[in-house]
Image (tube, rainbow, N blue to C red):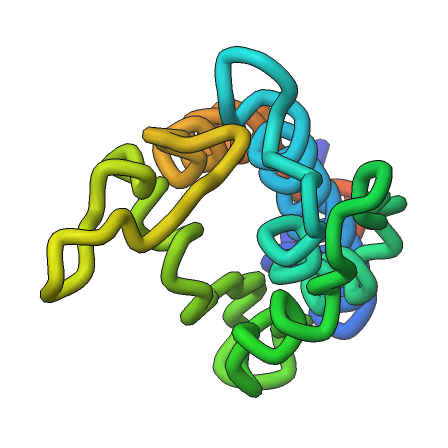
Length: 179
């Protein structure tokens, strides 16, 4: 009796795997940005979430929200002045970027702002800041501290910990010849 077995190294369809990986990571990053925005917008202050009064603070999130199709509500309350353009204007050119992996396999989103009262309210109550003459600089209806970056980061990391990569075995073929 004579028995021969030939095994070949597994062949991985790398193109199909990369495409599935790309789709999975784009979806995970989009979902992660949505989770981050939801936490930041809806749970940033003890009372009502990210303040809406003139809509300036919320409008700083508009570029990122539009990149991930997040339904961001921002319009001034009642007879408050409309400062949406101020909020969007305080969003530098790199605010709201969403990197889809084309560059070195990096999938990311970015938010940044130069809106003074939002920056101050992240860690402090802006209503306590005075100008050089001792006059209160801000008169906000919902002052900070907000700590929205911490809350958003925690929500994103929780989401990211649940992301799994595609099963490579689906894209692998092994040949065994017995003769």
